[in-house]
Length: 193
Image: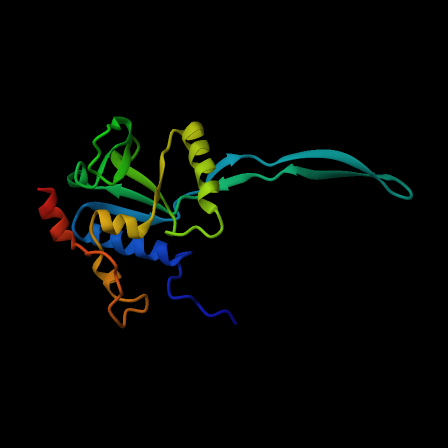
């Protein structure tokens, strides 16, 4: 019997940390909603070919895969409230050298809202998955015009604010050892204004 990990239904502790961050922004009215693992994006279809297998008495028609389909699912889709513009996000189409916002967002005409798509990565990438994400990121932008942003939670927390839940250990029993000054959301907002 498999024992559930503390961070499930998230795939990693880092995804859980970012969900705590987004929960706090939702509670404060900066985020309308955030979805974990929104709908998947099919980047390429399966490619197969037909061939005939010679049997003892007849030939059998066969179909084999040449290439499997490639599907990508962002870790989070964030729908921002208008009040978060220029505080937490900027329009990805207005990229400038002086960027004082952490997130990039784009408008969705169907929803009439600002959305960010996030890929969560750990500080240390032991399996080199950041390289794979970099390829997917370019592919998605080229194919759909969607920008998926890589987020490293500790870097995000250092540059903006640290969610209150992160101040305790993963199981929530003790204070977490943090090697930077953890600002609260209120402190971050005061610094912004």
